[in-house]
View 1: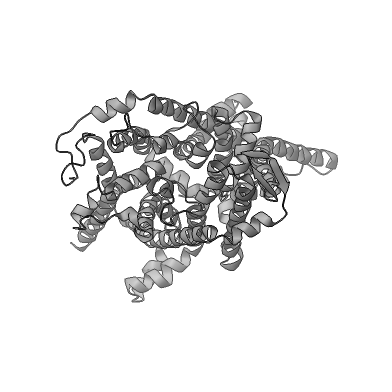
View 2 (view 1 turned 30 degrees about the vertical axis):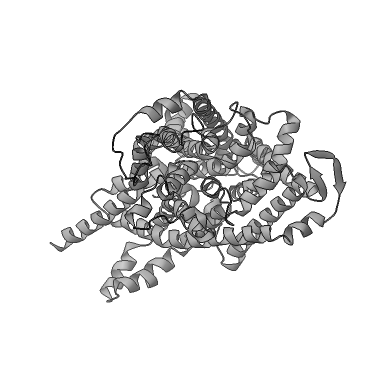
Length: 277
Length: 314
């Protein structure tokens, strides 16, 4: 059958995309299980000759990595939370209210979304030292929250625009109190948009590297991407290659879990915020 | 995705005799709007606009953190120094090469991906899930993974392709190749999702009609599909261009700027943070900002990229 044939053909291309996305992950995985002493012996093969967990135990016993993991989680979660709250107010106003400054806010968010953060590392570095927040959590949370705001505001206002707000009044007409109408009608309608925005914002903070290297200097606030780039291995005689890959596997797991659980929402969020579809 | 275009929720004017109340209500709505958006405004101004102005001021001074007392007003001297330094121009060229190559390849590849995601029936959600992994992965991790794949002691690439002892990170062009490859792997999903959103908006009937009229698949693509998703393509290209222009993580991890692979963001970082040369560093920051403004201007005015779609203020 002709239709079946074309369908198979598309599935074939789909499998290729799958391989394209998964192949580097497979390589990361295999390198993480190679022995740190012998991974380069002879001609390096793709898969380990013998599998070992030693890289994982070595990164988890390394204070540099465990503190970075703590910092990354703490900073990303707090910055996401704050950014989503600030953006939620703004997005509600954009979607529902008529006021001067709406266009300005949207244009400003757009401009900051395109802003080269590297242009700010010098002044921020200097200001943060003056304020005493260089190399602290708050010193990273503030810029993360700011640079995540555009994404949060666009995504959430796009979601909020689709909410049938009249239902709130309808519920009140049917005898619900304003609070009940808000909690039982509006919150369930708005929650998916807020949640999706939070995931995208978390990805942004989890991934950020430039500010993390510029505004931190010790394991007090250094996040995983920054720590990885400074990681030299447990001893100077051992190559850090396999340990870095083990650490990479660990920090990729949350991403994979979020993607697997919320694939549909992430796609909707990425596309609705950028281009109305 | 369907968008239900909710009518503007401006309160309908109350009955005639009470005009004072109407303006009351409007002005209270305005006040509420400003109050709700104030935190966002304040944060964005404090963390971006203020430091940017500060950078402009600093760029007129000779100022190193290692020598704070030597701070001195030098006018445009820093700009002259930067613009006559081959290091700046090398960074401009490097950034341009990476940006043009990655955006061009990603556009074609991303369109292919979008097309497959649009047409595929079996395994659709698998493909969409898989494509999100590179999007979500930490850029530094992607940079390490690709670096180790090409690196002499750990990599498999040379062995697979029979390249012997070829050192990918020994020269400018081979280094840029690997940097661009990692960039493409990581960001094609984003562009392909933007293109998919544009693709689903092209009315299926148009394609059917063209098919009935005997247009070849190639003609349908160029004459029907692409013109109808021009807005989405332009927005995707603008976003990715400005994003690629800021590239920092990949060259940092892969080459640390060796062999003329330093990008503009990297140069700004090195001058400001590593060398704490805040005067010249700020001049670089301001120039970098200026290049971004120029690119955005060219896209918006030159190519008439319609940003109202992005901004959402239809």
